[in-house]
Length: 369
Image (cartoon, rainbow, N blue to C red):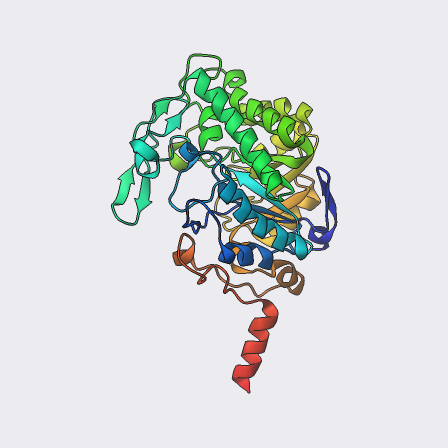
């Protein structure tokens, strides 16, 4: 799989390999959205990635979708993230912050004064929020965003991006996937607006393009990527026009000069090829060539690079459980198995205690002796 160890340009960065750490929610920012020393260790352990993309980080109070997720909207949060970026850079790594606004994926439990989450339309997700003291709480019907709130939210994304650069990040990724706010505007099942932000494909992609343009203007488009997951039904999303929607979106994004498009492949490789045909820049792919091919495997990524549908490939569970993933791929494995029980919340267990291949071999040798 030599293709995965070639260098590749992503915006202004030259990555030493094509192995990207995908964003993964870990829900361990227990102190007012601030990451801590365990998060510093977690990302520093994985600094051999060509590029690290962090867990989703809310750009505003109302943008929070889950408990204990980190933010990038106040000075203390920025200072906490600086320890992470310094540690990653000290080990020669590169790191982008993913900016994620939950939109209708939220709950008054998370906000001051029991505020309602916002969305493009007043349509509930049908999903629930986990809370440690009140159990599972159904997402309420969100408040439909006014034009003024849409403009303010675009600026929230730009402000969070400026904060990310102040925190030492090399750039940001806009979360346009998995049923969160940008995706909610894109999908006709969650966006029933009748104004300039709803109805036609041209209108439904408007919010995503405005966010990307504003963030690019704020920090430089070469520091901005966007993630999308065509056909993804997470968080109650439905799309009736996936094959037309995403090529139209990337056509509008192409002139902005963004660092990359990051595709989470869920439907078919044909959709990925349609996006690739319209996107002139770097494409990062979380490769799933068949609907049941989860989690993504190194061989899937290498095949995508050879086919030319991807310039770099991202992995989630593999990076979570294997901090030394490049070494394990070169060795042909073995791979640690991810402990799903420790994905969200908790302490160091299932977070910073996965052994490297060298540590595992040393422990085995010591046990044999």
